Length: 351
Image 1 (cartoon, rainbow, N blue to C red):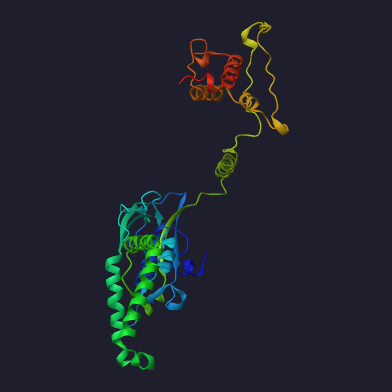
Image 2 (image 1 turned 90 degrees about the horizontal axis):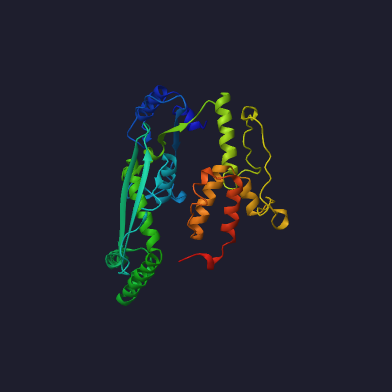
């Protein structure tokens, strides 16, 4: 538990967290969500109070001057707050939305979401565009205003500058800034759209003073916290971990079928296989690795049927009455069908 968590409630029951949030609110803490009432949590969930501080020192990059003693939060500061609040971004809807036909214009859309303390999801869409014809005019007005103040400057070269020098200075600065914005236009539009979402979804103000920045930005999150001392819970977690590790490559050993009691089936008659059918002898692949056929043989009956169905579809082979229904066929028939499908080459596939 961090110092901030201990100060503003840490981890505990819903009622305790609600009381601590109210205290933090009265103390002037900056709440990242308007909801302060948390009720009816399950035994497997727990509320957590997270907090983050932003530096009022402009050199740290969290804020920049908004005039006077006010500060606005930079993109870096907004990212810190979004991580604390758990803001997530839609992977497909955060994208450029203009038709890209105009090199002087770009528009970007961002959709971010957050889960409130009561579990309700909240989504917000923000758009940001850059029109470089407008930007060029704004930059030129900005530098014209700057040059206009040179007459009252304490710097000698600014006082002595003639009109040609001032005009060249303006054009040079406008071109420099415009080229930078053009080069990074998509990143600037993306950042602008995401910043709008963060400000709106967290309810941030336009500017803050030093006193407000000295206090933490507080966020309440609900996390899954099962009872790890419970044997059943621990067994489920271990099982889930093992399945996650072997899920991609499959089990290392063949799946064993449960033994059946054959005593009630009467006398067992040993029938010799037909001579034309070959015995099942899986061959090892290169370097001793199991061959595809050996892997196929390790599958259960239902898994073999699933593989045969997909393989027949891939090969473009229509299963006839000889093979259907697969569920009623023996394992030897499954292996025969597998060998037949694997032996098919591209020329055998009808198109």
